[in-house]
Length: 128
Image (cartoon, rainbow, N blue to C red; front, side, top):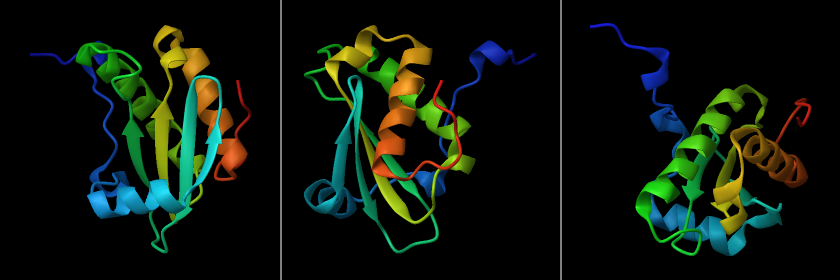
């Protein structure tokens, strides 16, 4: 059976995921917040050699899970495509806003990269 490119699921490598509840709470309480129209970002140094991400899409964005998951998948793909341009040793939370629901992939990509650039963790990437 041939696997088509259309069925490729973007997944962040396990090392890049922020999983522990305690780490996420620290990030939200002590992290620096920057916001764009479609997404926001909370950033905090973690003292590790690895940058870790968490993507938050709340019920306020949309009550249906499949809509929230679509935004999550898009943001995950954007982060994976730009991992080499993101500074190391940070914990980063990407927070979707309701405007992200209506955004195209390109608009969402511009918004995510803009938020990361405002936070000072994006290196040498022109914002589309």
